[in-house]
Amino acid sequence: MTDRVLLPAVENEVEVSSPVAEYWQDKMSLDLGTLRASYGWVFPKEDHVNVGVGGFGYRSDFAHRLKTYDHEHLNRRVPNQVRVRKSFGYVLPLRRKDAPIQKGRTLLIGDAAGLVEALTGEGIYYAIRSGQIAAHAIAMNQYAQYQTLVDDELMPDLLIARHYAALYRRLPGVCYFSAIYSPRAWRVLCKILRGEYQIRGIHRRLGLLGVIADLMPSYA
Image (cartoon, rainbow, N blue to C red; front, side):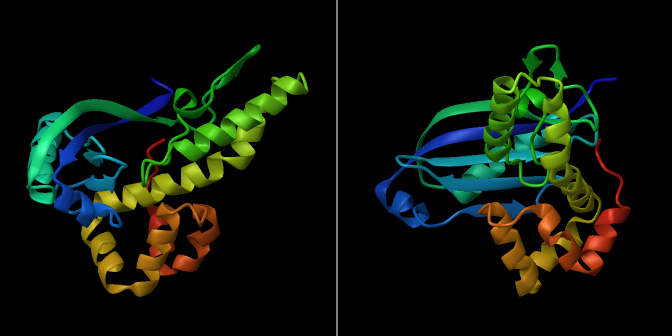
């Protein structure tokens, strides 16, 4: 059994016309519900837009379905493209609970350690923070403490996020309508995406939605 759960994603760097770039410069897009257990995004960059899709591969033909979704999502969200500069696929690795990320003087950080948040795909914060923890362990010559510190500080959020990812996979309609019709849920989602909230900090505030999420089996 692998010590990582791998979530597939497809990403495109898209050159757009000036009017389209101006439209997207202060916006972002999340597409929920088009393909079950998946999501799409559009993020503005300095001289292009980043458009992609990702999800939780729950069936054997998921890769084909994700590629089709990527094509349709790209043309629907950014119809007036100049050109696609680059397209690439990759996987988001999720570390299984207690999987080793330290052996001797070797420490794994970030994606190499599977420190990716399953709900939003965020990995930059966890890469930076695990790197800081690793640097401290090296400086103190306490390599064996690295995994314990990661487990204590970073893994609680990552494990809670997997329950919410499972909730989205199994009940996408509940998640979609909660975001659309509950101003409170929408504000919480926005704050999570901006990095203003840690998931464990808002978990108890979500009431029934949090209880339902707790009942969902985690991915790892």
